[in-house]
Length: 408
Image (cartoon, rainbow, N blue to C red; front, side, top):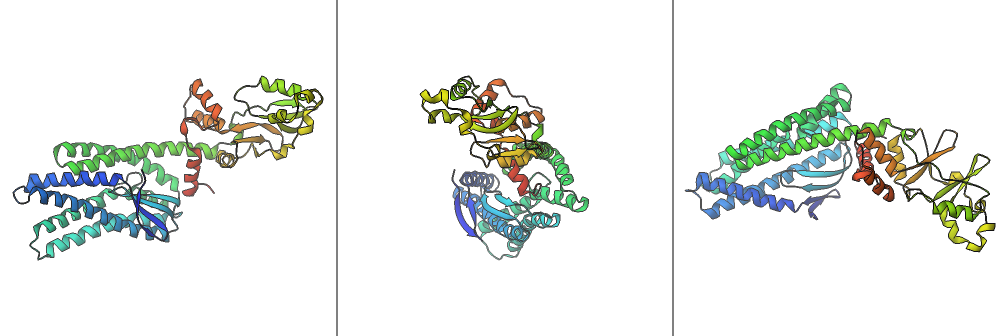
């Protein structure tokens, strides 16, 4: 669903996701029900709905206000932001580059909680000092203040990508000098805290307060899923950085003698495996002597196949996009994504061809290192398409690693 852009700051689009409208209605309904239950003798049904809607809508405006300040602080610390999309209780940022210093991340992490507390204090002060007799307006102001106070404390909970989690992770990074210690500690704490928050949320949902319980339940589930995803990301990240191309099981090169004619080439093509590539590599007295493509058969009349030799169509091996076997796995993925066909020739330090690597081989290796074994029918399916198995998005993972500054 397409998000609605509401404004731009320094070229960064601020958008509202359509789901926000559904959540706005849900919160308006929940708050109006609470008003009817607790103050039904004071407010009419229409006034209760008005309180619910204006409270929810005002909360969104304070969140947008906080995010604008957060954006300016992030930009000052070297963060490159593509877009910001609001989902009612927060925003999701598409970032091209994260802050690369611990102290910078600490500054970024404390902005939103601080502004939540500041807004709550300001609204409570306005309510306390107000001489207005409009109890409906005072009611809305107090509710928005309470929700900001609540969000401020929620943001400080050390869970996943919440500000509290980023703050804790950055503080550990600052004092230990290692960002990985902070990330690992935070991930373990996230799982524990999220499970506790989820349990408390379920209790609140059915026993005390519906929308606070809903908030806590949602936050708990978000934290648990975030912890599991982050743990999986750690494992894949370590595999990509610690493994080399030489660790992969390569596809063997299809060979043909340089003095073979096109009839012999055609016989090889007819008998080839469905998963084999369209390239054949020429040998001359045991040495590699270039490569050809199957399509040369179409360029020569069948009548001339006996008298036409594959050597006439050979291309130098150095024209085939290649990669050294000692290269890290993440560099291999970056390079293979720049090719049209998604395959690379693997060579050793002496520039001798060793085999072919494609997305399938990379994907199966990663799954194997993760302890997962794919059934043969799935393997055959992905072999035909030259895709990363089960939709594992290794290029995006590498992009995130680069964005976080984990690779250069």
